[in-house]
Image (cartoon, rainbow, N blue to C red; front, side, top):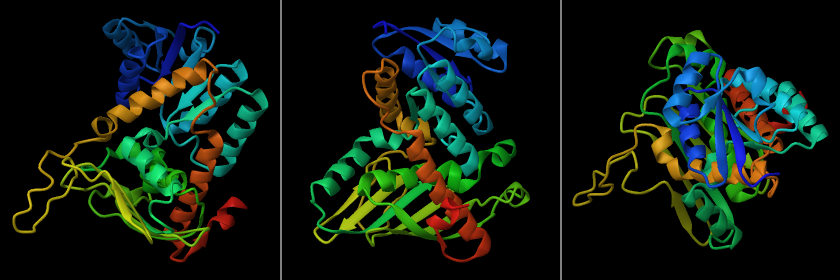
Length: 336
């Protein structure tokens, strides 16, 4: 493959446009090609960025790699098309909203041999990487507990909710992947609660605006997960891992979306983030730089469709547990 790559972006919404700018800054990318269901939007963005645009049906014939940043309901079809065309793909999570479709995508990708990277950007965050390294080095002793948070400051618009897969697949899937990646253990059972507080449309679409869960891992580690669409202090993503020899925290810095009420304590001193892209700007840059190497077929994908399927099993178990009000084993949904 040529050293200079042509990279396509499908979906020129907020995240797609941000990814386009990030990809354009990567060494070795010679051309950026944009595509969207709204051809005018793609053309306008291309003019702004000095890129070119084309129809979605044409993009697989004119690029060396493609970034899929479209609504979740379209991910599976586009991934299969990329795989069959032999075009390496990067796709935002989740691969699909259900297990059967995700398995179909995995089968198509494996049959084609085309590399596909899934956008679990926390694997490229310095804090999460340091936590993984600490666990692997045995710095914490035997890991016993973990605590995770993903909390948005404001809820998404109603039109987003029905196609999002719900709070567990939209938000919690990142925490689940990070938990697997950092600890090296697998979730075997969950117990979740969720409530549709705030806007009426959460209840209308069977979703939760607040959720919490306990997750049991196969090595006996217990983890807790908190998710929210109404975190007034700001965008909050953190993880704590505790063991018999120490405790560490990810995302605990001057931008943390909390405040101490202890006398004389000024931490955190900075402003919290208002949405996810500024919080993970460096991570997005690193994962898309990695994808350029994946598209060059120089390295294997650092997060695969198989990883996405494992995380989806857990999220399905979380949603089922919330709905039926009992613990659910991951094997129960895995065999569905």
